[in-house]
Length: 424
Image (cartoon, rainbow, N blue to C red; front, side):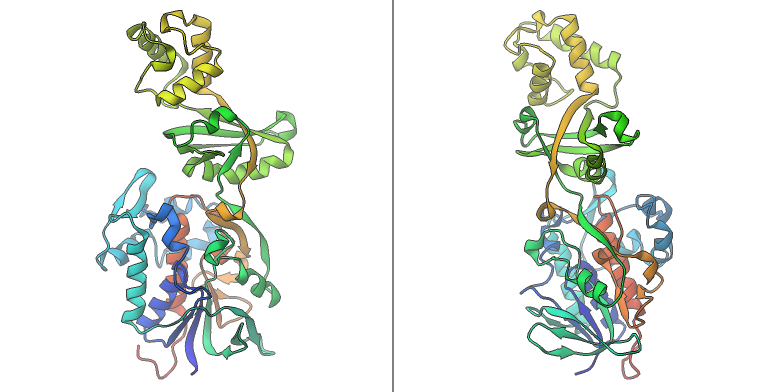
């Protein structure tokens, strides 16, 4: 059978593209190399699935994607975060807005998102063929793709092809960067790919002992040491931080990891953590004096406060040279001042970045100037459309990656030409 559209990759962008093309009347075949669809989607956001970032203003949304925003304005004019939320809400999936406009299903389950996409494809009769890895494209001499070759030797043909194979993060889900190799083979410029948005391993043993502790709205700066060799380069971010058995994770660590990767070129990297960015040194000192006065008979290790989790208070106190076995009345002014300084500038020493198996996304991908973002059509091959994580778009955590999948997937599905026999 000759298909109108073959979609390669059954992740979020591929399923969105397939559903939209089929809703327009196209005969669509979706090929997925895994035994089931959306394996990475089901684990995203710790299984909760950060559907999008609920920022309806395209200019403000794309401000988070500074390197690629000039390409994406035309795409977001067609389908933006509000469009995605409407799509899911109209299909009975309610969502809720959390910190920094992160949007999640009310169910707190990625399965809800998966169900909507799969039901949409079923509704419009998308043919799904799982356990079907392909090895590349077949071309004619006119820069036209004539088919895709499956690993078993079969060749499948369509009028148009949508490539949605994803990046290299979480390879255990089948996301191994196959599409990058195929595109490179046929002449597309693929920018070097690397793990992006990765947790950070630290050499500080005291930090690892805080495993499981999370901090909201803290500020962190990354600098390379010595400072003069870093040429003044640094990065500052604010957000939620999670301590782990190897170091740090959470949105703040993930979003600063790309800067850390760059700074590692200059030498050792130190992260400087402001635990209380809303307070200045004097305000923190006054708050500490009050704590020590009200809990004077308690040992330092036993004090409690709304300022910070008790475990963080203990760790910082030890770093400030305070004997946590002593009573609060025995803490000297100098020790208290040292603790205040640590609250505003707590150093964390980077050991290394975790690898691709822990990365949220992959940086790099197809050069953006080789894609028409009004249609997601390749400028080299008129019947090829490129979507999702295959594109060279660096983005922070917070729903931006999935929104790019929804936007580019919808536009590709909405742009592929229909055959004369297809209903409109």
